[in-house]
Length: 331
Ligand SMILES: NC(=O)c1ccc[n+]([C@@H]2O[C@H](COP(=O)([O-])OP(=O)(O)OC[C@H]3O[C@@H](n4cnc5c(N)ncnc54)[C@H](OP(=O)(O)O)[C@@H]3O)[C@@H](O)[C@H]2O)c1
Image (cartoon, rainbow, N blue to C red; front, side, top):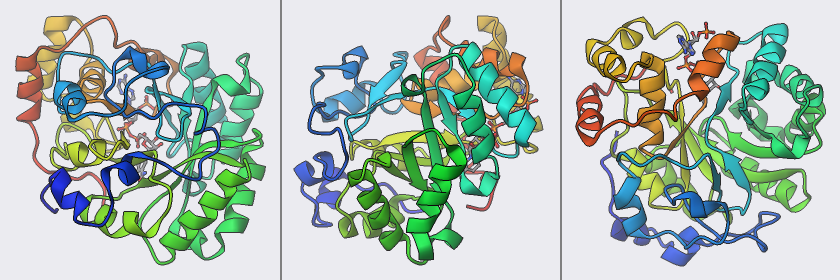
């Protein structure tokens, strides 16, 4: 893993700060002020542009909580807590989407590779909340990059929810720049609202960003207490790009040790909450959007219910010390 670069190093890549924090190509941007993850509640409207001070205040962990929605660099508003749908079969996925929405959640993450975009679409279409209040993310897999235009059409058809709020490239791969440019054209055509990347780290971003017009709105990477990305997270946030964590609870099938961690258990007991709630709250105090996956409506409601307590600086540091650079998946 590369070490973090300073903003000065990024500028050496040939991107000016205004190019990095100013944006092109996304519908809606003209009307909305630009911001970054880490602003306070004023981010919903009329907020100030990103500042170094903004990140220092909350970027790497503080007792301040991330707002419930943030404005992406595309100008669109995005909820900061949601549901991941990896490994959920059709019926389970529809049920989880409905449970999320009933519990007040508005953000849903899917992907071509999860084979459940159609189920997410059904959950969205058949719920009691208007489409515009929901935020649906999907992803193009590298084996789709060669014909990304058809892949975008396929995602729109499977989801059948009118437009895609956020589309990510799932992994770096052959043809990723051209696939991203195709997504940029789909934004201009009103089919997608915001663009992002997944599994892009510092070196990958250094290589990718100078080749595209639109600064990604969001980067989604593996983040949990045993794999914290303490260098990558501030690097990305300093670019005005929102960070979203996948496997926030260690990953389905990989989380037995994490959810029984003695340090996390002791912090959870102090606050009278569960270990998943502590982990999700820790992410939010680092300004990281969370999308825990769940097939269980009780878990889904519990995972949203993380606003009644706050982790102290000392507790944030204790969790920070759990980092083992231990990835729970290969990418
Ligand atoms: N971009 C990428 O490459 C990538 C890779 C992997 C995942 N993702 C995204 O990230 C999302 C999250 O990852 P994930 O779903 O694999 O793993 P995760 O969110 O880290 O963990 C999910 C596991 O935690 C359990 N769980 C959830 N809430 C719980 C609670 N309150 N108490 C106890 N257990 C709880 C779930 O079981 P129950 O079903 O019983 O609740 C499931 O076994 C995915 O769904 C997907 O959308 C993206």
